[in-house]
Image (cartoon, rainbow, N blue to C red; front, side):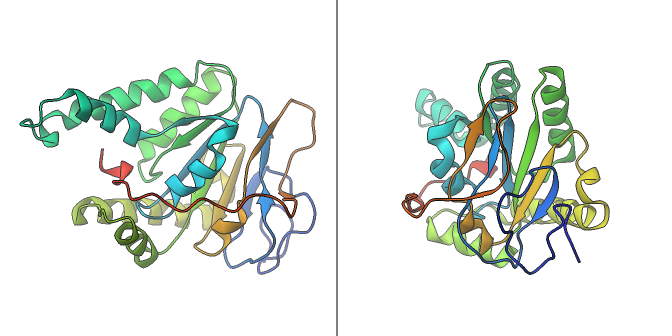
Length: 240
C-alpha cells in the first residue's frame, strides 16, 4: 500500500516528500521531519483533546502567528467577574474565537490554527476563508487513539467532559475513515494532509515557511534541531 506521496506504507520517507495530497506517517518511525510550506499558507493542526496539538504548536509557534481557542477563553475569563460561571458566557467566547479566526485569514503571513478537526462545518469555513483570501490550506492531523488522548489529558491535569470527548471521537473517526477511503478528496480545498499517530508525531520537529517557488516538502531536520518542549499543564482548548 502506498500513500499519495508514492512511499510504501510502513517505511520512512527518504529525502523530500512533496506536500501535496495525503502523507500518512502512521506506523512509520524515522528521523525528524521539517514540513515546509509557502509564506501564504494556513496550517491547521487538529486532533482529539490531549492528542498533542498544543505541544506541536508551541514547537512551531516561533515561525508563524498561532490562532488558539484557549487564548480567547483565557482573555474572556480574565475580564469576567469570578462569580459568573464560564457556561454563562461560553457562546460569546465561541463566537469571538470564530470571528478572530476568520479575521486572521485576512492578515499577511503564515498562520497556524488550532482546531479539533471533528466539526465538518468548521472545516468548510476554513477552506472557504483560505480560498477567498488566496491562501493555501494544509492540515496536520494527529490521529492518536482515544486512550492515548485521555492519557495526554491526565498528564496535563485537565480533562475534557465525557460527552464532548465522545463527540470529538465520533467526528474525527468519520474524518479518518473518509481519508482512508477517498484520500485528500475527503477534505476539499486542502492542498495537503499529514496524518501522524502518537509515535510519528514526534517526528514533526519544526516547520518552515518559504517564498513561492522555493523547494517545499518534508525535509530531515539537522542534528542540532532543538528537542520538543515539555507540555504545559493547561486546560483543554477544545472545551470552548
